[in-house]
Length: 412
Ligand SMILES: Cc1ncc(COP(=O)(O)O)c(C=O)c1O
Image (cartoon, rainbow, N blue to C red; front, side, top):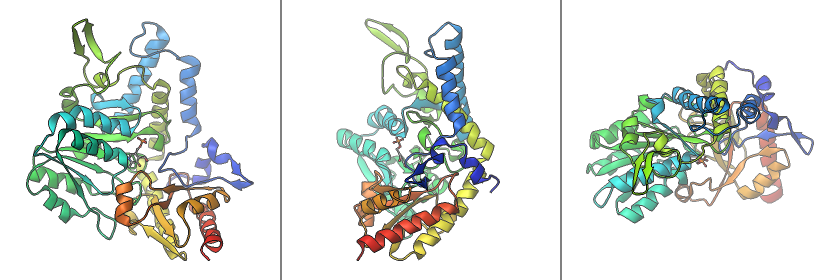
């Protein structure tokens, strides 16, 4: 690790607060990360100096705001190794990115006789859009099961692809529940072997904030990003795509900014990516995104990953050793990210969450928008502590204390 967490924490205003006289211990970054001061400052800069609409003004501050908005696109392309900035469509979040693909690609290209392959560990954002499309246009939905080690079952995946009918693969890079980092290179190679024409979509919501990501290297067709989990603001996400895919796709949302020409009886769509950005976009958020990419790159994503890999090893080991605690997810830190789901014997996750709140500890409890996976695990809900660059081993004791207290209170 080449950054100092105590110094780093000072950059995050939210983390300076106390809850009932205790230090706020934020262990819910898989839901949404905290925002460093410089990202807030970048958004203020827009509101204080360059507040104007983009892609349409002819006056100075509008042109400057437009240049910054487009610079954020290039910055994100660079940050995730996108094939080209023209393949970066700004959306509201990764959920909207997946819906864009579901409406503009899947519903138009798939039909009866085709199969879409997904997995049992998907967030609803990377499952429900495909399920809905399958209901409406009649293709088959298949899903890759997980093994007892909480990893994708690649043998089962191979069988599910064997008939060559899988035309679309939708998979998460990192599970938001199990923390599992999926072997995307192997899976994509397997899918292309079974059907060289397969189109691949990756949900990068839990990967981009935590790992060095190279979208072009993965050779996927679509890759979804959500900015509020990577130290950036809420309200902004992106679909990273191969530009040739986007250029061949019709728009998802229509209206202003996404056209070249309109008459009463004819509309000509704009080129990608603008064709997919109808209406006024999240401009201040794009300023914030650029600052968030700079912040993460200054730390170095390899360093962020190294820090989290060491930390998740310590947390998983301690939680596994704690009485009455069951961890759901790989034990090998090299195979997992920092989202750690667990159950505490005799304590409902919601009771645990409320008890931990009294210790100033923020965790997520519930189904984590992954109900198919909850069904596979045989639970209604889990507790989830999730780690990020501002967490450290001193966040472990309050978590363990709260768990022990919850057990002595509820599990009698
Ligand atoms: C793996 C994964 N995919 C998708 C999402 C949805 O993100 P958003 O709500 O920003 O669209 C999340 C958010 O928790 C997630 O963890």
